[in-house]
Amino acid sequence: MSGAMSGFLECLEKVDNALASTKGPWFFDWAEHPTMIDFVYVSHVERMLASAAFWKGLDLRSDKYQQQFPALNAWLDAFEKRECYLAFKSDYYTHVKDIPPQYGPGYDGGFEDERISFQKNISGKDGKSWTLPLSFDDDVQPLYRGPPLPLCALKAAGISGDNGELASEGTSYEKAEPEQMAEACRQMAGWKIASNGSAVAKFAARGGPEGSRNPRKGFGAELADPYAQSDQKLIPSVETALKSVCVALLAQGGPSAHDAALNEMKDNLQTQISKDQARDVASSLAYLRDRIGVPRDLPLASARQLRAHLNAAIDVLH
Image (cartoon, rainbow, N blue to C red; front, side, top):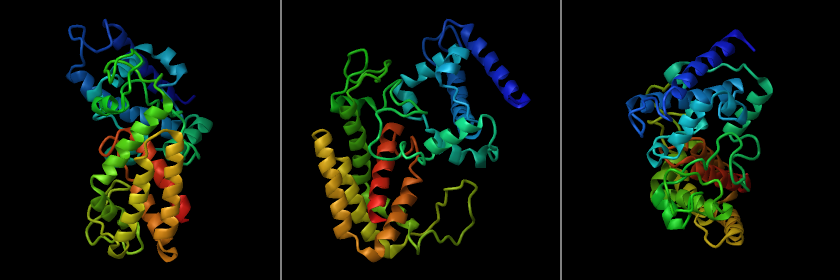
């Protein structure tokens, strides 16, 4: 282990000791809720968790580090059980794409085997994390230590927390029925696309051959280009493809209904998208997939469903 890594872990030990010195889980004893110092600090810790996993192969939320830094992880667990935290909690992919322009580039190092595995998972290149069929939970970013969706969405889906209460805050959802949860997460993603479909199609069409032309200056964030132009000729076909994706996302009735909707999506893509535009539409869907931001667009539990369904559509078009 490098001296820099040792120093980093020693710093975390000091933070863990500070949190352990209070009645917990917050930084101050007098509050039974997070205070300003908790909110300010957690946003930096979030970025640290993503950076450590992606560039150094260090999963500070793993069982090993739960034992090494119990107070720090209890602090994070307490945050993750609050709906208000879900509203601004990002995922590792979004962080590693927006960290470099804020803090400077990340450099690979640390524990190589774990780093490579984490990078593939976070970037959706492991054949699992952004690919159907999705596992119930994620290997690197556990989804159900708290409410994975807004409480109103969980209530509408009839999903109870592990404490047995319907759409409850302050509890985990790790014992939820997997297909019921998956359906709720898919439907939130489908609703988000369907409610603003034309604008999303226009945005996605930047990924076409005549798109992404920008007469203005570039931006530091790798995937940010607010002035990019859309491929105007491709927009109708991209919108048609997105409607087909929504068919699969909004399916109700369990696994068999979802499988049937996926087959319908594939049939629609093959019959409604011309062969001469198929690859360009696929590029547009990939452009959209890579720019799904958490939590800006969706919470992670829904974002992974949208990314995976877009990948299923891309596979058909390719």
